[in-house]
Image 1 (spheres, helix red, strand yellow):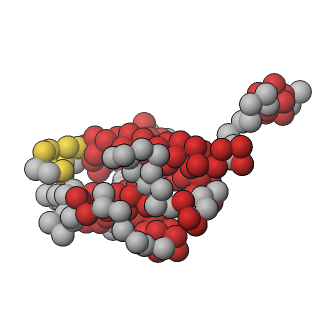
Image 2 (cartoon, one colour):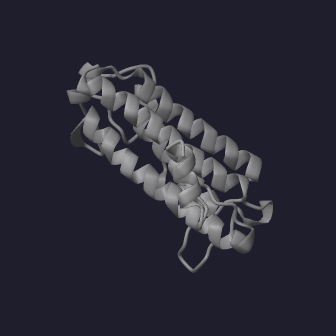
Length: 180
């Protein structure tokens, strides 16, 4: 396996893990809390989902079926500012936005071949290699998913169900993983 093949395989797997963390947080969100913010100027889960979905469609929509020369990762149809407006979308609509955005992203990731990684595209007119564009979005999407986790954890309080190794559970986890 080449380094480029390994990278593409790894980034696909890791980003599926990031999405799974977001799925786990959203599954714990009460219907009434989708539009709740923790402080003035903060983002609700609804806003985070709207923004991620809008970004994924804009960045990756033109690349869902493979690399396209001179692709621009900021769609002219995107209204980024509207993504940060608190709307009245239902949890079902927001979950669909979430799923649709991730599908576009994963379709693009799945279509890339190793030779695509050094090809160029633009985001807001700034030239990136496909590799740089992927890395830019890995950081961006992970950051927002962890914001979502923090928000839902704060809203759930003592009812939060951990998405990783529970406190006090490291030794048992390690023993199970290492066959002890």
